[in-house]
Length: 247
Image (cartoon, rainbow, N blue to C red):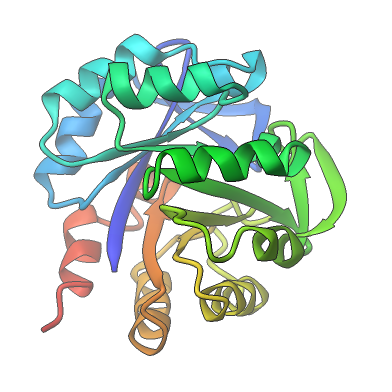
């Protein structure tokens, strides 16, 4: 199971929000490139980047920092935030050198467009599935839709998706652990044949251990994104990585 440290970019800095709330921001570093290098040096498999400014603007904003991170690291990077057009996806994948583009809101609003994009870039486009009480949240989590996360994912099963990144936003940045309802949702998605990455609420090594146990039963749960916990020191990246390196 992959461990993906998260770097959220806002105003060129490395930050974390609580439950996606821009008013509840903590700045963890002024040099995202150095931070990325640190997580990579501790054995992370892949980096999970979020362009918070891009999510608001509807197009990538922090792309020069992302370019620098991609250029500096030996591990692949994925990015979410602001993908609303073919051109923005093409630019970030082909020009900036991202490994994966993560698309959330726009996949819900324009499913046919999203499907075409996944077919165009097989294995390089991920679905960002942000849920509140099992329902999809959109627009940087400012709105909750009437579509269940499971139903939205179902539309895209059978496509060459890189991953479905499932976030329970009630847990995100709250340091409260991953709840069983979220795990049940992720197992359901994995059983549909979708490759799933867990996000939101991974707080201690017990959470990593729990997800690793699910991964052993259901290998389609293929990764865990860890954010605030690695900045506040409740999880050490090297320990999380060691836990997932079993023979």
